[in-house]
Length: 179
Image (cartoon, rainbow, N blue to C red; front, side, top):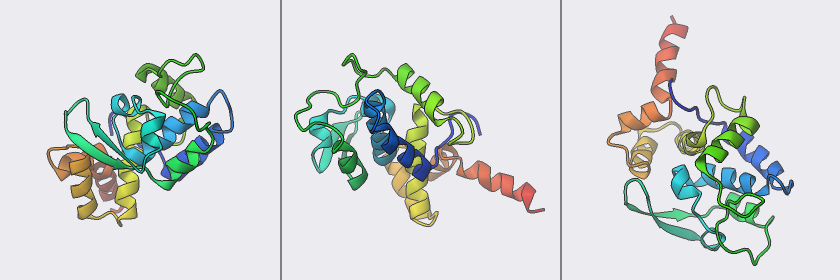
């Protein structure tokens, strides 16, 4: 598989919750939790505000596709927000200097903190892929879940989604391993 890998959802979630307890990693931990629970591209994810995250759902217009999406804020995100002061305003994911994280900084941090949690190159796309793999696995690896994910990710087909999530490569590998 080329490109970035997906991360193991449970390991990533646990590690991100531990980061929330470290003032230097707190904002990054929240970004990881939101990334694996919302499935957004990093440019859209990094622009979310505390005000948006505190709602039950978030309406966004995706930067790349210009399509409107409504995202549900789940219990993992709500729990992560309890580590932050109620009166926080502005961007949710900022450096200690108060500036929004750049995608390059996010990629560096992911490589530093999540090396070994996936099976290849870790990047900001790994969070989105982690979300997709979790949805697929939670729905017993069904075609239905691939149809939903294909719509969520704005892919042209479920085949594109299979390749994106690394599913097809695993199935091809199994051919050789089961001879």
